[in-house]
Length: 167
Image (cartoon, rainbow, N blue to C red; front, side, top):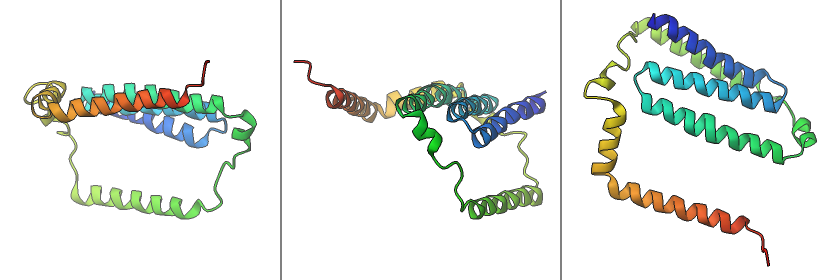
């Protein structure tokens, strides 16, 4: 059953990525990207990495996708449609990508990589969310708080810089 779920979730992920690549409408490409992000979150769940799956949904499928949609809404639609769709020099990156894929497939076949136990060691000592929380708040509390203060200052700075004079 696990193998069937892996193939279904992988098909969702790869289908979303292909939708991004092949879609002519940038808005639909952004929606395909969100679809692909949800597939990646499903793969994280299969690896027993629920914390990473939630981060994938909240940060990527939520914040990043919304930011991309807002930028596209702010830009003029004619500007987006007039952008060059494909680069004329895409042959070399495509050839390099195919060579890397062939190399990885050859190595996986040669060394008979077994992925049946992938992610099983993550759940040995409780959930990984609990382990991340314990490490973050016991050993790295000061850097965590400093990071929170820096992000707060950056947020206030962004608001001040974009604020227009009301007076």
